[in-house]
Image 1: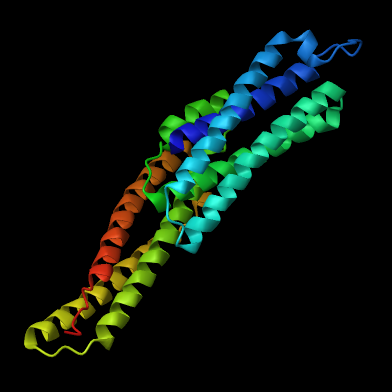
Image 2 (image 1 turned 120 degrees about the vertical axis):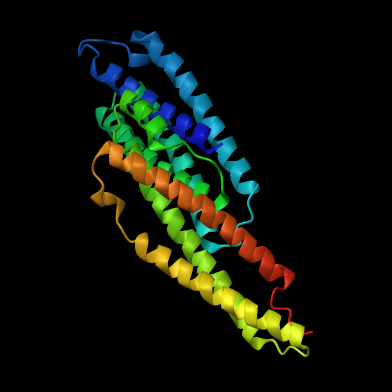
Length: 265
């Protein structure tokens, strides 16, 4: 799902870039617009329009399947929805510019769609981490990025994934604090429940220490990683950490809901 969304958004950018190049290559004396002079431009627009529609559908389905209780999940989902909508808008801007032969509109559409694609890839990577959805690594994303003349895809995936890991760490810390508070407020009436309370407190404290240690490790900025191979390696490491944190948060949440600190008797 996340992979397909990125592929569709890349396709839209590919078409915007290709049609812009066709527009720039028109003879200044031509009396017809690019869609008349270059029939392949129309075919490309059809594929781009279909890609936008798929991207809108995938985004809507993805967000509908999540429970946006966490602020990070809700805000990231809304940002992604906004970027997908903008991508479609910049495609329309390109069409209008080519129809009206307004070069500034064509140039603006290409520039803004490039920025929009970067932002959308970051949002997709961030949301994939928050929802536990599989996403391709830089090793599979970068060849297609080079094919469309865009080298920033790996860095955007890295930045979004890194941000997602940070969000998971914050969420895990919040859950463990609630677990510790619940355990400390319990007043067990039997030795067995007293033992359970003690173990719940120890578990919550240990989890907080574990999360804090990962927060320190995650403070390394992705901007400091320049080489493509190093980016791919770091991204894979982050994805592994993200998957483990996602499962950890899920387990902690289930323990909290089941009342691990149910030492109230």
